[in-house]
Length: 408
Image 1: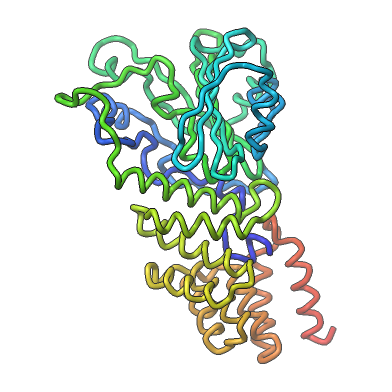
Image 2: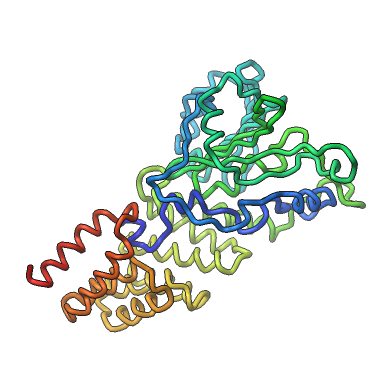
C-alpha cells in the first residue's frame, strides 16, 4: 500500500513539516527561565510558520564532505554501530523507552561530542553532533556549497543576555536538508570569511523534532537563566514523562508504518501507536492521529474489525478530519459496506475538494455501480494528481480505467 493510498503525508511532506510551536519549548518546569523566554522571543522562526512543501523532484541539496556518522547509517542496529567504534569509550543513559549513547572523539578532524539515539527496537533513529570549539568549514567545500544553496530555516541568538546590553549579540543560522526519509540540520555561525559549524543532527523524519541540533543541551556555550528559587534542575513530573513517552512511541509508529527504514512494519506500528495512546498525548489533534495511524496499521495487518473500531474512535475525536473520514471509508469498503463507505468518501471530498485520494476511492467504489459518475471522479482525480510524485503508477492505471469505461 502506498502512502498516498493511505491518505498519509508523503515523506517529503514530513521532511518539510515544521514544529507546531517555537522549537525552544521547555522540557521541564525549571527550564523556562527568563533567558529562555527572551531567546524564544528573539528567534526569527521561519520554522514556526507553515510553508508549502517542495515536490520530491526539487529536493534541496544534501551533499557533504563532512562525515558525521562515519561507517554507521540511520536504521542500523545498535550492536553494529557500537562495533565500528573500535573501543572508543562511551556511556549510555535512558532516552525515554530507548537509549542515548554519548561518546567524545577528541582527535581531529574533527573533535566533537556525539549523541546517538536508539528506539525500543535498538534501531539508530538519530544522532546529534556538538562541536566545541566550533568547527571551521573551510576544509569542507562541498558542505559549504550545500549550505550556500539552502534557505535558512531559522535564525536566533546564542546568548540572550547580550540583548540586554550594548554588546553585539551573536546569532546562529539553522539550515535543514535531507532525503526522502530523514532530515539533516546544520547550525552555523558566519564570522568574517569563515563558516563555523556549532552543531549538526541527523534523524529519521518522525524523530526530527525530538532530535534537533538547536536543542539547548546540544548548543555549546549557551548561557541560560535559572528561575529564582529553583535551587537546581527540576525533575520532570510523571505527566511530562508520560507525554514524552507518548511522543516517542508516536514517532516509532510513524517510522514503522511509513517505511523510514525501507520496509513497512505494521506489527511494530500497532505496538507503538497503542503505547502512544496509553501514555497519552497533550495535543488533541495528535492524540486523534495516533488512533488514525493505529487504524491504518491494523488495516495493513488485515484486522479490519479492530481497524474500523479504532478509526471510529479517531473520528469521534476529530469529526471533520477528511483524512480520517477517508480512511474509515476504505476500511468499510474492504468489508463491502458499500453504502456507508460511499457516504464517507463523499463527505471527505466535501470537506476537502482537492483530496485526490478520496476522489480516487470514491471513483473506484462507483465504477461498477455508476460508471458515468466514476468517470467524472476519475477525471477530477487525474486533474489533481497529474505530475504529483508518488502518484505516477496510479495515474496510469486510472487513465486505462477511464478508457475502458468509455469503451475506447
